[in-house]
Picture 1 (tube, helix red, strand yellow):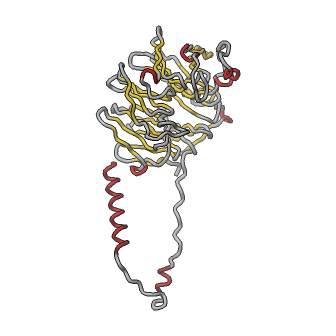
Picture 2 (tube, helix red, strand yellow):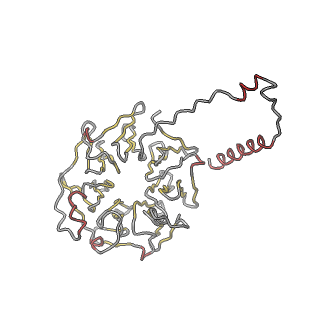
Picture 3 (cartoon, helix red, strand yellow):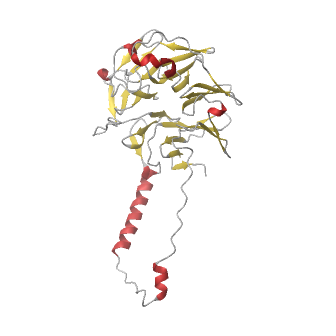
Length: 366
């Protein structure tokens, strides 16, 4: 795909160059009145821009019925049933119109991480959980707003024991019946820099051995095997202590996307850094990678959310980089997913894109 697109660009450039260097003498308008009409044709009508899913859409979740669900930053949840789009908002029962993640459990129930709490969709109604167990005394000033921050969800996951977990700005919580109970992470009580809050957890990941990993805002990544918690930070070789997402590849190695340091690879004994920009950005550091995804073929995808724009694919041997010239668009990529047909989807600031292994297509409302 990349080679074909590059050749096409070269072909167009070659044609353009040839037309620019060819000397053609045109008759004057005075000598040929008809030429004045041809020289000043009617202005062409510019094609209308495609209607994107939303301003900042996520990569979709495909449910058991084949519906595609797109989260948005400001406009709620969008469902596509193969024929039409339908939007759900707080007016329908969502905790917030800011959607950051979702999962589907065996009975078809959707659990949705919103900026206003954990919302459940049973196929008919949306309801938002409000029962939180006490989180204890606030350890520092930021915790004066702890009760509000616990409703600021960043992700939701289901472990192999069917235990539901949420990541919030107030830490990690697990669902116990109708109550959300805090999961204590002592390492986060230590003084550290943070971008949002000192207790924030971006994502919770369960590895092949059932061990939980907590990606944090400033405390690195915390490994919890149920008995012992081990913290990995830049002191151990992690490229940044602001860890947004992670996956485990078929070899058992771990990949971490960070908010400002690029990507870290951990083989169980040491870290290596990838995709670190040469120049530092005030807003995105050495490189922001919030979307990391393991596809069904075993390849790992990394969505660049700035300053570089595009997606990297690692097939276990080498990296391949896809950008606008490959059809991916020119937006930042904070989310990546995959449907049952093996198509890889990208939620970007320029719209949603689908990749079938050969080409990228901008998926729109048109």
